[in-house]
Image (cartoon, rainbow, N blue to C red):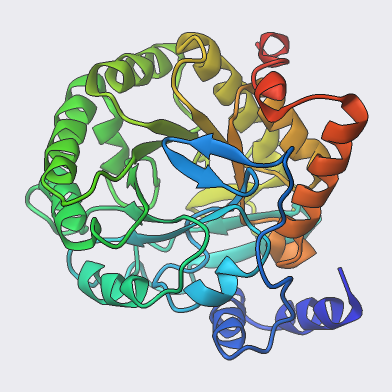
Length: 352
C-alpha cells in the first residue's frame, strides 16, 4: 500500500461507510486512483476456469461495483477477473439506511443493503461499453417484491447475458427475506434449470455459477453438490456473508445483516473444503470470505478453490490488495515449485 492509498483510506474511514464506498467508486471512475494498468500475470498464475482464460486466480467479489460504474478502471487494478452486481430485473432502492457498518476491531463489515441497484438494463448498458480485457461477470438476484423470484434470475440472464462473461446466481444473500430458502434442493434445481434454459437461448454460451451461504449444514451442502452435478453448472462460489456473530468485539457487532471480513475466514474455508470433498473436486470452486493476505488465498486454494475473490479486506487494506496477493502467490508458487492445479485441494482433508 503506497502513501496515496494510505491517505485515501484514512480519509474514507472518517466518513459514513456507505458514503465512503460511493466516493471510492466515483474516484475510480474519474481516474483519481493509481492502478497497475492491467492484470498481474505469469505462466504460473494463468489458468482456465469454466472455459474462461484468467491471467491470475485473484478476483474481485460482487458487491463493490454494484452498478458497473467503474468497470474499466477495475479491469486495470491487477485482478484476474471481476464480478459486478448484484443486479435485479427492475431497479430497487434496497433497505433503509444506515445499512453498512465497519467493525474495525474485527477487520469486518456488516451490510444489509438488500440488492440496491439500478436494474439489469442500466447495468447491461454500462457493461457493454467496457473495453476488452479480463473476464467480467455479473451477480444476479431477484427483486424483493417479485411474485416469482426464481423467474427473476432467468429474466436477468435474458437482459444481461449477452454482455456478462459469466453469471452468478445469488441465492445466499441474507438481506432479502426468504431468499436463502432457494438453496433447498428442489427450489435450487428448478431455479438453476430456468437460468440455464435462459442461458442456452443466448447467442454464445456463458458460464453459470451459484453462490452459497456459509451457514449451510452438511445436509444442505450435500444438496447443493447434488444439484450442481445434476444441472451442470460451471462453478460454485463459497461463500457469501454469514449471520453468525461469534467472537466479535466491535460496537456494531449486533447489527442485522451479513457479516464479511476476517471473522468469516474459518467458517467459509471449512465449507469450501467440505464442498470440495463432496464434489470430489469435479466442479470448480471459487473461494471467498475473509481473505486479507496471500497466505489466506493460499489456504483457500489448498482447501479446494481453483480461484479466489476478495472485497471486505480492501476496505482496510486498499484496492492494491488484489495485485499484491497475486504477486505474492506467484512468488510462493515459484518457491514451492508448485502449479496452481497441484495446489488446489492439496489441503482439503485438513478441514473438518
